[in-house]
Image (cartoon, rainbow, N blue to C red; front, top):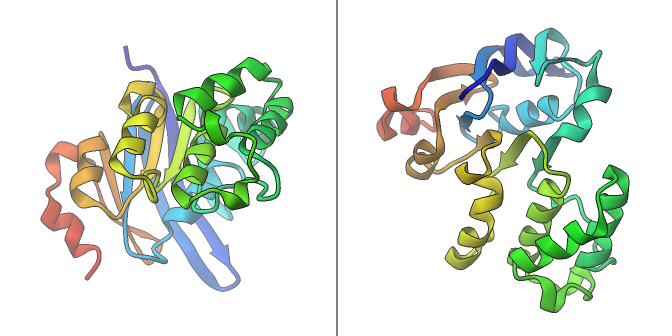
Length: 228
């Protein structure tokens, strides 16, 4: 059963100097649903994820995530969110196992969870090698493991399958796909694939909402217009 709203944004605005990276973004997303965000580079997609992850403070408007008001209650939210960004947020000189063990200690997660994820994502055979020696696809698998290590309620995913081959996409799907049953916010440049994942679609252009509808009411052509 779908519960109350997991995300409630009302007039969210975030500036960098004089430039508004996000301007007057308002939406509501029920728990367990998926919001897919489309828009060209610089549209504000990554900024939105960083605000929701408590890494950036909103300058105006109200933001409530999983019942916590941001930024006032950021402390209550951080352990309930998993962020998979363009940068893997891992230490290149450490091994995959060492990286995950470090994050497990931060979150109070048992070390058995680390080994479970290494095996699930077929990283175990190379888990002792420095991250800098691994392929981008293998590093992305480790980044997925870091994202879900603490079993978050909200997944914030920026192009989550980038650098992954089809076999790896199948490996990560149970953890960050619809089967995870998490509330998800996904930034995508893939209209077809993104629509297949979405319950709600948000289109951004220059930081402003240009499209906000249920996924079933949006077609690929409308998403393509965002990039023109």
